[in-house]
Length: 418
Image (cartoon, rainbow, N blue to C red; front, side, top):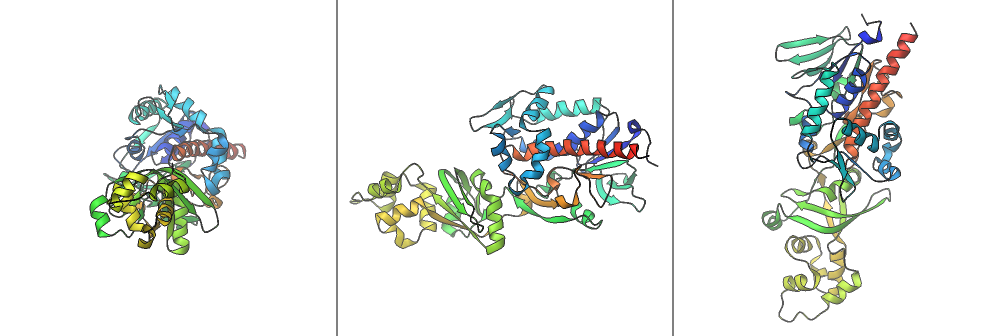
C-alpha cells in the first residue's frame, strides 16, 4: 500500500544519467526514500564518455538564441530552462566544488575539462542525502499488480514504488546503456511514442573507391556549408568535418543533422553546398584562377592560386561536374558551392544522440504520463533533440529537475485530496 506520510514515500528512478540523478537530487532533498536503478555496472556511463574530450556542460549565448537550438520543441524545453537554465547549471556545478569557464566558442566547461570529478562529487552528495543505488538492474516493465520488474544477477526482482521517474536515455550508444529497449514497454501500455531516429549523426556518401582509400580519416577544415530544407528553411554555418570510409561526420555535419535527416526521409537524399574557400569572394577566386597556368598541372594551379589541395581537391574532383573544372569561372563557382549528396544517416547506435521517444502529448505539465499516473519521464527519452554544444546536457539536467518537482507536486496534491 502507498505510504501516507510524504517523508515515507518510496521513489524509484530508473536510469542513472544526468536526468535521473537530477531527479534523485530534487526528491532526496524532500526527505523521501529515493532509489536509483541502472542496467549498467555503474551509473552515468554515457555522461562520462561524453566528457572524455572535454565536458561541454552548457553554452553562454543569449537566452533567445539558446532556446532556438531546440527547434520545434523550444516551447516545451523552455519551460524546464526557466527553472534551471545555463546559469543555474553553472551555479549547481560550483556547489559541488566544480568551477566552470567560458571557452572562446562560448561553450562552458569545467576547469578540469573532465566529467569524472563532477560525477564523483555529485554521487557523494546524493549518497549522503540517502539515495540508494542499484546497478545491474535492467527494467523489464510492470507486473500485473503495478510493481516494477527488474532483471538482476540474482534473478528477477520486484519493486513497489509510490512514484517512478523513467530516465532511460534514447537509442544511441547502446553499449553504455541507452538502447531504447523501453520504447515497446511504454507503447504496450498505451503511451504515445515516436520512433527513435539518429541525431547529431554522420551520413553516408557514395564515395569512389579512390577517395575512400586515399582520404578516409582526413579532416576538412575551414569551410562553410549551406543547406535549404524542403520547407524552405535556409541554414548556413562554418566549421569542419571528417571524411570517413562511409561518408562524413563531425561538428559541422552534426549542426545540420536534423534538417538533413528529415530531408532524406522526405525526398530520398539531401545535398549540402560546400564553400571550400569561405575567405575569398567568388570574383577574386575567379580572377586568381584565371592567371596563366603555364606548365602547372590543375592540382598545382589550385594549390597555388586557390589554396585547394589534399582532401579539398579530392572533394572537388569527386563532387563537381568534370566540365566545371575546365574554365576558371566555373571552377571558382564549384569551389564556392560544391554539391555534396548525402544518401542516408549512419545507424542510430553510432549517433551522439537520438530524436523521437515519448511524445509530449503523452505527458502532463508535470512530465507525468497521462496513461500511467505516478510515472514520470525525463531526459533524452522524450521527443526532443538539440545540437551538440552543451544544449543536450543542459536540457537533460533541466528535465530531470522538472520531473522531480513534478513528482513532489503530484504526491502533495494526492495527499491533499485524501
